[in-house]
Length: 638
Image (cartoon, rainbow, N blue to C red; front, side, top):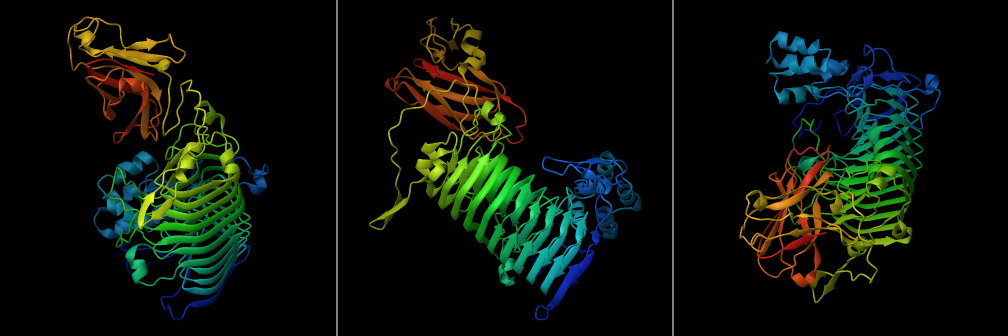
């Protein structure tokens, strides 16, 4: 594709290109009422084939908002694909992968033939055994797109239907002066089935199109790594998109992850999106470099999405078969969003995620996404997942600077969010500077105003010394303590009344005579007390070092980053420690602390960062054990 790419890209089924940069192809028209059909995948839904895979399933898979007249307006759906699955789910896509492997000469005919004739996932997996993962990946990358134009000027694509590509639907690359209108794209949900893509192209108008895709709907790319800059590839810029309808897809307006030479000067407006995973998706990998800038989104309606806005520099593509010279990490800046409604965001309303961790991982390069402006944005029915599934907050700002959120209002939460007490706005703000929250943003249902105020801390310069000034919050009446049985992701809370699995190893060893620890109910807010030390116990027998504790059952650990537990140390002597463990009292430690506050301090919130073990199953709930050791006195836990 470019001289610095290490993989081989196949031609499209229809192509218009020239390698002579000084002499582009001009005045290209692709139009008419016909269909460009790629025959890429069998009919089905995900990994489930429809009948024999060749019989159309048009209108068999409907969703909320679809026309009821499925005979006229029903849409097809295709199987999902994958490096191995392609051999039983694909048609043209399988043929490309099969021929690549055959032409390597590495594998005998019987092995290759068993792949070609696979009809189930089990047969494809068995046939792929013994073929290198790299070869499977490279074979998969040879799938053809449907329509490719490169180095063209004055391009018109209109009125045609694009259906069932093996790879992308339409790619217009390194071109200028492009109009696309009334194009219908049906590629859902074939792998990599992007809709209309404009890579390193300029002066683009895109209006009145319909896309139902297996990947990004309307996308941009600007190549990757240092090679993009060294080759002087043009930026992706001067783009106007309006009056489009985007149904299924990973990203509605999608820029990246190829950001190497920059994506800028885009106006996206008057568009409806339904069932898009990420409505406004801006992504870059840590080594891709470049930027996205000067992009405006306005007057749009979004429903049934996982994420409203996503800005991330931690994107990765497991199927990528190319490697390039690394560039500095990219940034997104000068973005504006106006007058957009989003109904049913399941994972995030807004996620601004610079891949930084200056505390836990200083190897990550410091950067931020900055100068962003959001105005008159309304969210409703937020959080159908209930528990956070992405970065521990419906609004997540990590590494976001110099940005304004004016009338960004959450009106309602899904009942699942309410029942799990995750119905909170602006509760995950980290490593941010100089944010401004204005207007009805403060009226968002259950807004975490303390965190919002803290993020409004600015940078001040005095005598050439730069420092961050802490925001001084107003005195407010504390909230009523939690009634318990909550999960809020960043700091979940659960009543001690739910605790179970009480144990005291000193009792088991017959060193101590006590019924503690246990739940104490004499106060309005119950507590667990006491966790006796093993020197001042009722039996009077010193027994230091024995563990004791209890468990919180049914804890959702997906996205868990921190645990806060109120503890009254009740002594100024001795040493008390707490170890937080997963699933059993001898399980993996995920957090720990040594208690240091004085007896006079009473109950103090002990904050412990959480590190979950690799491979932990976050799809199910877990027991979380609090294990205490104490020498010298007693403590009490609320």
